[in-house]
Image (cartoon, rainbow, N blue to C red; front, side, top):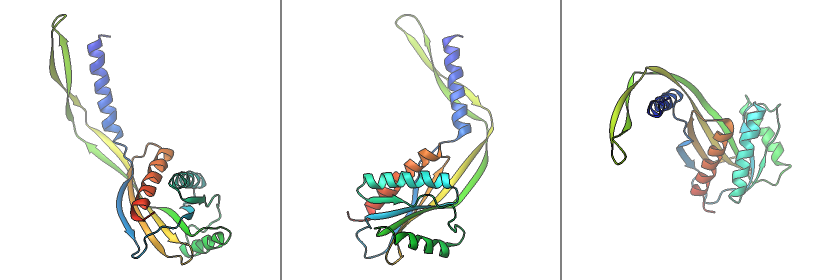
Length: 209
């Protein structure tokens, strides 16, 4: 295949794939709130991902614990708990209190999915310009912009809204909360790594360490 034709073909394919797949993004912090009069965060944390999907819970909790420990916190995963009453917040709080009695923890960090939304949008024809260089001899060349049309297509995106809450273990009161948004994560593992990084970053910004 002619190298110039090959380059044009690859460029067109890459642009089309980018437009169809959408742009993956890390977590976007939407809001942060903190209880007044509290300057220091608990240092010994029990981490609980509120989900009945044990595999997802394990990955999320592990990512948060790893990032928290790297930042100087003592953190422990809640761990396997398939029988927790996920649909009953009051009963769930009681189970967490029972677990806290066996641990030396002064705080509980929870993560829960607030909303998951799938959207399909129609993207009309788009014109993109590809720079093309043509040789005019050994010492000269000319570059011009070649217009290419990307055909109309449908673009699907998935949005996740997560709520992260830090509770004081003794009182059970929420002292810090973060809402975040993630669109089209590449994978669960990558999403949890990016998310845990954002959580710890915002925690450190909110409290004096």
